[in-house]
Length: 304
Image (cartoon, rainbow, N blue to C red; front, side, top):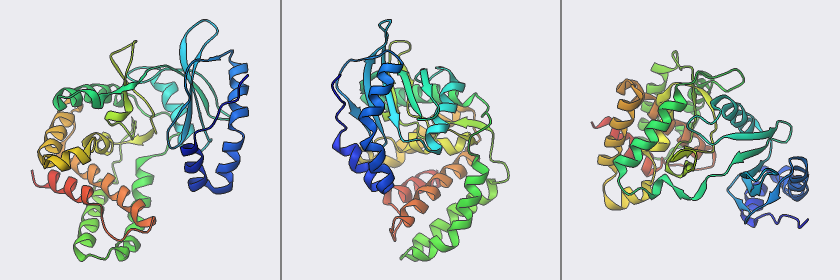
């Protein structure tokens, strides 16, 4: 059997993110692919693909079903994804056909990776489709074993005082404190829904079983308002280039909160929480200014 060639982009991503551990996992990846092709009686059926974190191998199952083998280094996020996919069981999301909890290897139904929801030109139509999927996913109470938003929010608030000192612009410091204040008002009621955490246009693919299905969840337990930012941010660079971002963000926010039945003030607060989380990560990476997109997003929501 011809060995799988690991894309260089994936190898670079793992070396950058995980150092020696990541390089070792990449080195063992061809053998891991071969092991699961044999264990699950699969045949390769197309070119290998990769994102920043996973290798995807199109396969045919022994009974002829088209599927994909997805391999990613085991860590908290991959364990959460397995929990989420098992619990959702294909309702609004790609179906998990088999999995190995030790290596986090998954066998998933094959969707059309060439057609994401970003291909739908009418933004209201696209956001309506996403909102419908979102509603189905959020209808599920989070099972045991997932991270809780209350813990994540508390950890974020603990990091704010030090993070503020890293920002060079006093206006940016005020903004970060304001976003933290919004989270502080909500942290006592963090919610119990199972969140996808990364549901944007690029993570919704065309399918045969249903017209569109979500992929690549990073589940946690919490308030649905914390799950809106990726959808609001979809295609941000194009929106910003057209000067249309504030209007589109407000329209998307209204549509999402209406379909999901969310209190808009609360959803705004948790969306500011996502901006806070992203900014804390940026500051940890050495940045000394807030991202312009984060500032614009906050202004769009707060200036309603």
